[in-house]
Image (cartoon, rainbow, N blue to C red):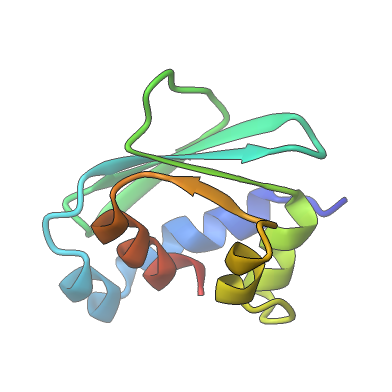
Length: 109
């Protein structure tokens, strides 16, 4: 079981990158991460694609819901697991608009 907060914080920090900001312009969404192994829920609130905050909380109706284990997130962020392959193998379950999911890749991979 990986400590996931540093990985989630790394995703939040990517919003400070000008290239990420350009590709996420206008992206204001609530991204809920649900970890099945640790039973933790984390929320990233993205604002206009150029800033984000991280809190340990649960939203009833987030824009995007990502469910996985902490080890899968750590593997994707450490580039030991291919995110697309993990999704195809159902190691990651995602609910949300496809357009938003494509943007999520920019901060996860």
